[in-house]
Image (tube, rainbow, N blue to C red; front, side, top):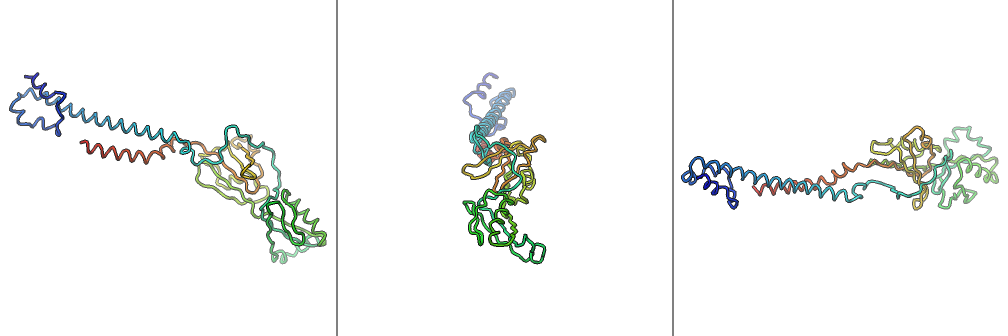
Length: 303
């Protein structure tokens, strides 16, 4: 009898009932089978539960497989993981040799120049009322390094320091004025700072002619926890073929590099520390959400 019960209820081709508890409530079974045949029914119920567990395991395998595929897809794209990196160079790139920078700023093309001219060696400078009422005209250094000045025409001053330019202009104006006194200043000296690992960039006005690298980093907010203080790039000159310097200010022994004098239009970039794990998670999280929703709907329909 037990053998017959097992054959009736544990056959491989027997479909799983929609409700496993109906096995215990079937009136026909209660009429045909003795009490001890409830054991095969229990086995049948266990088989049903196991089938559901197998389905759940399959869903888990599919979910894990989907996660792996998405992770591989994200990792296979270097642009995805390094999309915010700037000014990358090839491994064999030859950087400009570091040399102690000059202590004075040199005038460059497209600089804006304020100029004041006084006679008699600047005697009128003593009269503060005259000085305050005098407006300083602004001149632009042209692309070829020349500046157009009244009474002189075009004069080449690019590459000269402020002192050298003032001396040169005083010599030229001495042919027109008695003991000329010239004062000039550059008004548009700016540097650009990008801090790696941050979404912010800064355009900083150079406060003085001896504006240093460490001052620019401080004015830009310092170095973030996601930046490399031992790898700071400085781009100078024509951006089609710039000079690129690399600085390390991590150690006190290397702090002499932090006194590097900046020039107008220098670009400073602090390399970012890689954060691959967080970027991968942020990239695949939308796909994981979509995948989990699809699997949830599938599981509901499979019940």
